Image (cartoon, rainbow, N blue to C red):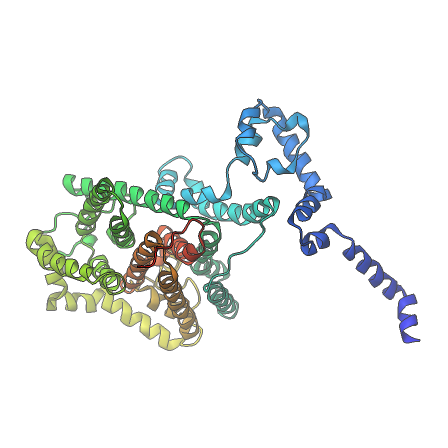
Length: 506
């Protein structure tokens, strides 16, 4: 009786109508059809897809210049699969845009420092603050559409997905409970949330071994050019602010920074890149390739030295210790020889290291240097131990812009603890440990010699960045934050790539 009353009621009939509509909808057929061609047909025949196709055609019709030959060379691209009207199918603009696969945009991300520098030194300076966000949004929107229309709508699960999502949830929770000034808090939160999303881009858009090799070689070539510019700056004795050198130091006439704003950032970039280049050298198949990577390493090493960044030097040493332990113990011997010989060949190295170990430096640092800033950060953490001061309120670039009493802590972990409390720093450290385990697991799983060597170089470089964050705010630099999360995603994707070679059993 109750069942009949429900079925005859207005609410019951409305629910039944909605249920029937859902069962026969295009969206349900797309979700439940086991045959991918049926899903593609459902998408392409839906009203929404046809509206998009008509809008694209109307926008591009005035620019139609013909291009049937171009279209034949671009099969399978997602815009062409929308099947616009015949009058618009040969549009030059349409076929050109359709030919750009989403995966190829990774090359633009690899060129991040050059693109960012070019925009910041041009009349498009306003775009420089937003281009990476726009690129990330474009990738997030374009990738699933492209995959669906190819009939391959899949998501690559990695061990980092859950740690990243949990950390982002903790960060949002802390933002909600502790944000004295919302605008500052949003900008401070962006440092932690936005750049971590690049992990998902790389872990899903890296498809095969050939693509991985191309991206790594592009990064090596880019790093070589940046390093050569740094060497050039040293030769001409580029002018630097007086605060970059202590008056008590001798034997150092300048510090290079290339296009990366500061010697410490350039040093961190090279800490990431040199182990990666060494991995390519060790995997080189021909003598010519070995000569090429040696030629790339030479300006990188010189530029790292000429940054006179003690933090980067120590991080580089730590990265190669890790590399030697996991990959080849002979790397440790080469590191020991370098540490012994470098101060004798370049007096500036011994000057910088010697001054760092002197009582004068410790006294200066405790009075107005890193030690003083660390002590102040610890005091602030003691005042707000659980939730911290709030994102963007102490120790970083955001606080330096908006909070008059704040300055750089020069320790990203201590900065995180001060802003987000023990809850935030614990979640962040757990996230980074999960990242290290993820890369190490990829290294252990791989059997392809090239990819295994690449994973070892990535692991060493990424660990070097984490070490450098102990004395600098490296993750606040967009270039370095994007590179860290992007390459972490690359490392997570390596075991899943097509085109891997399994060595024969001995």
